[in-house]
Length: 294
Image 1 (cartoon, rainbow, N blue to C red):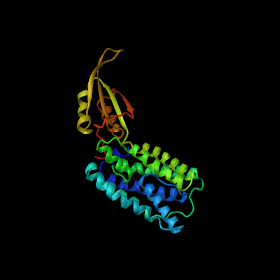
Image 2: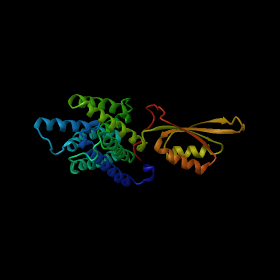
Image 3: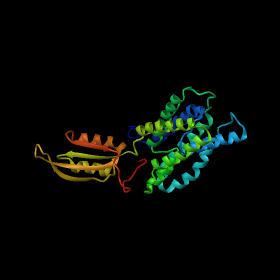
Image 4: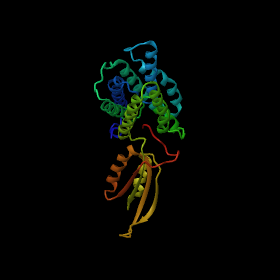
C-alpha cells in the first residue's frame, strides 16, 4: 500500500502534494465546466463565487473560490493545532497550499471536456476521490470539513467525519437545488457519492478492522510485535481445536486497515501455518486511537 511503502515522511509529503494536484485538476477540469459543486467548504466557496458573479453580472470572471477556500481554512488549522499534531498540520498546510495554487493557476476550460453530464461527474468524482485519498493516505489533509471531522474524532466527539459531511453537504446541495436547478443538485450528489466510493478504496486509515489470529506456538512473539511495532493492545485466550483436540492461542487485536499488511507479513514470517480472520467495519469505542501518520 501507498502508506506502508513510503517510510520517509518527506516522501509522503511529496506524494500528498501530488495528490492535491490531482484533486484540484479533477475540480477545475471536470466539475467547474459542468457547473457542478463539490462538497464541504470548497462547495460553499464555489457557491459564493457563483452568487457574487450573478450579482455583478459577470460571466467569465476569475475563479476566486480557491483563494477563498484557503482563507476559510486558517481558523480551521488554528482549531486543529492541538488535536492533530505538528507533523500532520505541516503536511496538510503544504497540501492545502498546492491545492489552492493549482485551483488558482490551472485555467478552467470554456467548454466541458466531457459533454455528457453523467460521464463528466463520475469521471470528476473518480479523479477527485483518488487525489483526496492519496492526500489522506499520506497523513495529510486539504483542510475543510475533513479536517474538522478529524479534529472532532480525535477529541472523542460523536460528530465524526461522515456525519459532519452528510449534514454539511445536505444543506449545501439543498441550496443548490433551490438557487439553481434540481438537475445541478442531483448530478452534484452523484459526483460526491462516486467520489466517496473511490476515496474509501484509496484511503484505508479510517477503516477499522478486528483480526483474530489462531496460532499454536507464537502467541508471545506475535503479541510483542503488535504492541511494540504497531502500538496496539492485544488480548489472547486459550482455545482448542475440535477436530485435533490440540491447544491453540487466539489473539485478538483491533487496528486500522492500512496496518493489516505489516501484521500479515510478520505473521507469515513467524508462523506460516497460522490461521486468521479479518473483519472490516467494526464499531469501536472512543478509546480506540485513530492514527493519522507516523
